[in-house]
Image (cartoon, rainbow, N blue to C red; front, side, top):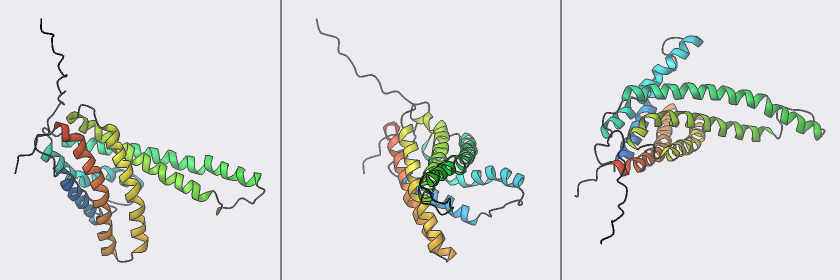
Length: 234
């Protein structure tokens, strides 16, 4: 009697499909990110006024405008892409990041300040603002802010992307966003401080955004690759 063959479990299909080959997704992601950056440079910092309430209201509006190019790219590849949900999760991610930033700032100026004071008391040194602990706290602050912002946005965005991957790839997506922000943020600050010409600064910023967007776009391409149709032979 022939033994029954144990088959490999069928590939679990995601909720929605990737509708086209994704070999060039990274390129479109880079272009969309650069366009979003340029829009952000052109967009006035204050659209409707200068009050705190107006600034809080205009944040979701600015976020929505800046996500339009990326929405176009995702809609190009993903079937039934819910652009409204993408905007909502980005706004939620932004609000969570702001709350996280407040927590980080409070921690920075309380706990780490106390630690620095204790160190100086133990070493019998006067407590000074320009102490040896400040580079350490600055590094911690930069890493914490990066982690908070990148994690908040990428986890929120995964609420939409997971519909095309069956939950696989969250770690890669979050890691790519954290790495890109860790690299991009200091480069943008250096370019802003080192270059006085606004046009050259914008150009340098666009190059930095393209570099970091490649990390995120290429990672997304690899996450979606198992679910995408194969490219037609040349």
